[in-house]
Image (cartoon, rainbow over all chains, first blue to last red; front, side, top):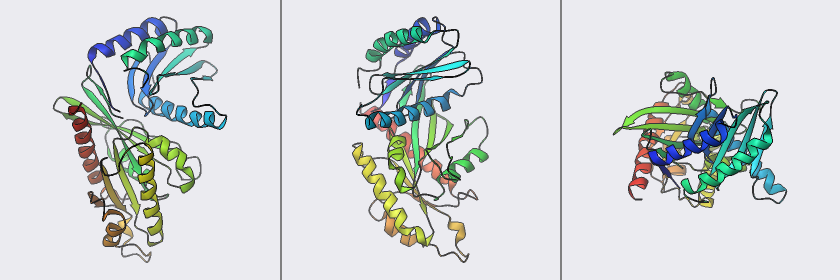
Amino acid sequence: MDLVLSKEAIDNIINVLDEDLLRAGADCVLLVDRSGNLIVNRGDPANLDVVALAALSAANFGATAEIAKLIGEDDFALLFHKGKNENIHFTKVGKGFILITLFGKEVSLGLIRLNTAKVTETLIPILGGEQ
Amino acid sequence: MSFIDLSKNEVQCKVVYYGPGRGGKTTNLLYLHQAMTDSVRGKMVTIDTKGDRTLFFDFLPLALGKIQGLSIKIQLYTVPGQVMYNATRKLVLKGVDGIVFVADSLKVQKEKNIESLANLRQNLAEDNLDMKDIPLVLQFNKRDLGGSNIPILTVEEMQEDLNSELQVPWFSGSALKGDGVFETLREISKRTVKYVSRKLLSR
């Protein structure tokens, strides 16, 4: 499956990410597909190689999906990595996409989880449904 | 899966270097990385923790200029060649738009080449892809060993083993010296972009 997004669709995605995640305190938000393509990145990715982050995140998601299968699950809906200062949160968007949110220690994980759930719901129809 | 961003007029495609272990897939990417300027290449990521073998994949993003106003971005991946890492290979193949099969010219690797190509065919089939449909280019690597005392396969033998049915473009190469590396990339890029645009036009 290939994905073509119009300027309007990209603008919609950008609005949702800015409104619900960057305003909530996230440092950077990326939308990538499961084959590693970077679709949109927002926020301040100073010194961050977003293209490599997209590829590695897709791989990471794929690898953990294999762990999920070992314990009888199809997939994990979200992953969270905690660092000393920076945290990273991955959420599955439909079957083919991943929303990556980077946020600092001053932002609560609960807020990010709440808002990514909301963003995910909004993004699915823009990205062509559950597929 | 290719992705076209109409707000930036950009197309992203994924090309995977496939082939038996120790055949020179990573060396191809390393050569490209060294030979290209910063304006073309992105940062190369390699995950090879087991000696010099690729454990997960290598990744090199390239910006290859514009075709009809559309910027072409190609992301090169390698897979681990060792038989036991098939789950990883399937993972890396996900959403592939073009494939370079790097075959090893060493005589002792004859069977490994054939096995790896069969494995590629099977992994693609599991993803509902036919090897005949997807852009594929062969590279017969390590040709520089010809004339040394290490026995190598002739090009004819390799063609017979790997390309008699497929009939895809092939290149003699020495990834270590850079011979054939750019030729291979040029051919697969051309074919991949054509394949992706044809798919888009048929939508």
